[in-house]
Image (tube, rainbow, N blue to C red; front, side, top):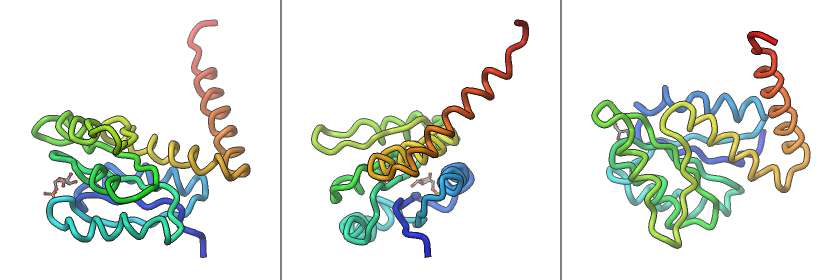
Length: 162
Ligand code: RP5
């Protein structure tokens, strides 16, 4: 079985449509992950239990997605030595600015690497996690180099008038 190196946590199953690109990107890089639904406000003890045990279970990076009063990434970051990437989920009330501010505005000493709101952020979180893991995994880093070349090539092919 593939080692699970990334732990994805989302605050609600309703976040899943925003998160599909994150899982797809990890699949593309062949990086194993587990996905949990837990809430900083509805299941706080379970969130802390998960973050306290993630490192010893072999997880290398935690990705946390939540919307609104998005404290999930911060609470996870409070109790783990692992890097935590926060994805602010787009919301209907405030468009995700609420999620962004409550994810990014961490007190000093407890960083959350916060990516963009919504689907772009979800995909970037997966890439960023792979870049972190790739520091100690040359074959994964090679995949990221290839991915960046391919992405650049696609842009270059879009030229309209040369
Ligand atoms: C957050 O509240 C979740 O991450 C979700 O984005 C939002 C709404 O959750 P539900 O009411 O749909 O479960 O905790």
